[in-house]
Length: 349
Ligand code: MRU
Image 1 (cartoon, rainbow, N blue to C red):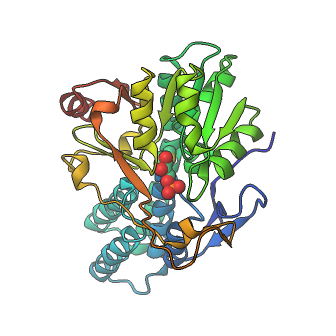
Image 2: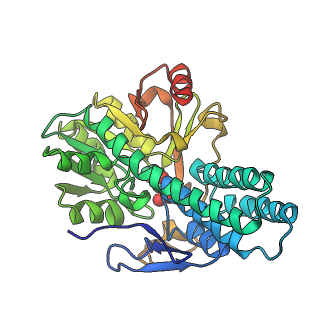
C-alpha cells in the first residue's frame, strides 16, 4: 500500500502532492513563497478545505520569512496584507480564512509581547505545524464518530474527495473507511465521479484503491439508481463551509445527491471539522460560491467535448439546505437538528 501524503513541510518549503496530475502521476510541487501557495490553491494543485487551510498556515510562514526588515509594526502591516491576498485565492472553503486569521492573531500576540522578528518567525512556524498536527487528530475523531453511525458490512456513497488528499491524514468523510480498517470492520464505498473536475474518479477512487478499500466508481447520474436499489446505507460527504443554521456548501452535485438520499430514506451525514463551521455566516445564502473557468465544463482531459462557443455555467460548489441533512459529524461530536441551537452548543465546547 502506497502512503499518500498530501502535504509536507521540509527544510522551510511546502511540498504539495500535485492533485491536478493524479491518478497517473505522483509528484510534488515545491512552494517557496506565499505566491507559490496562492497559485497552488487557485490552480487546485492542493484542494479540499482542510488541506487548503493547512497549506495557508505554511504559506503564512513563507510570508513571514520573506519580510525584509526589523520593524515589527511594518512587519505586521505586511503580514496582514499578505494574509488578505492569500485569502483571495479561493472564496468558499472557510478553512482558508480561518488558518490565515489564526496565523495573523499569533503574529499579533508574539509581536505584542515584544519578541524580535526571528522569534516571531519561529513561533509562526510552530503555529503552522500545530494546525497541521491538529488536523490529523481531527480526521481520526471524525472517522470514529462516523463509524458509530454505521454497522459492519455497510456501504457508503460519497461525492467529490474528502479523504487523505483533502486533509492532513485520514480525511473527513473518507476517514470512516480508514478507521473501519483499523478496527477490523468492513465498510464499502460507492464514489460519484464528480464532474467537472472528476475528484471522485481521479482522487477518491485513487486513494481508496491505494488503501485497499472496496470501492465502486459510478457516473454522477447513477446515484438515483444505486440509492433506489437499496445498495447504500448512508451518504457521507465533506464540506467547505457550514453556516450557523446547518446549510452546507460542498462540491457541486452534493445538493442533488442529498435530495436523492432523502427520497430513498438514506441518512445524509456531513463530515465537518469545526474549522469548517462558520458561525458568522447565518445561512447558506451568505456563503460565497466560487465560479470557475468554462474550460472545466468544455473539456475532459484537455479534449473538447462540446462546441467551444456553447454557453456554460460552472459553479464549483452548491449549498445543501439543512433540512436535507441528517447529522453534522464533527471531531467534537455528532450534531442533530435543530442545527442552529446545537451547533452553537458544540462550538462553545
Ligand atoms: O474544489 P475542491 O476539490 O477543493 O472541493 C472539495 C470539496 O468539496 C470537499 O468535499 C471539501 O473541501 C471537504 S474536504 C475534507
